[in-house]
Image (cartoon, rainbow, N blue to C red):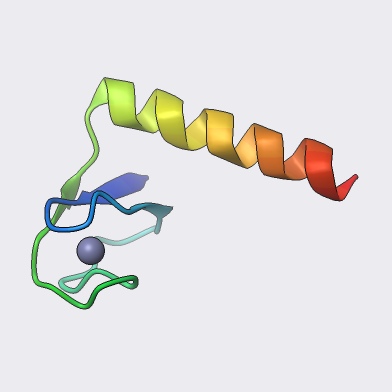
Length: 52
Ligand SMILES: [Zn+2]
């Protein structure tokens, strides 16, 4: 499942919803919307290509 931070817009994947953003530490985490999930997946794919 993908989550987004409303404070810094950081996108990250976790199996359970964290209370705090792993990037900025704010308690502003919510489930990512469809558009953000697509963004996240594109970033992951890009990272895979670069590290391959
Ligand atoms: Zn954040």
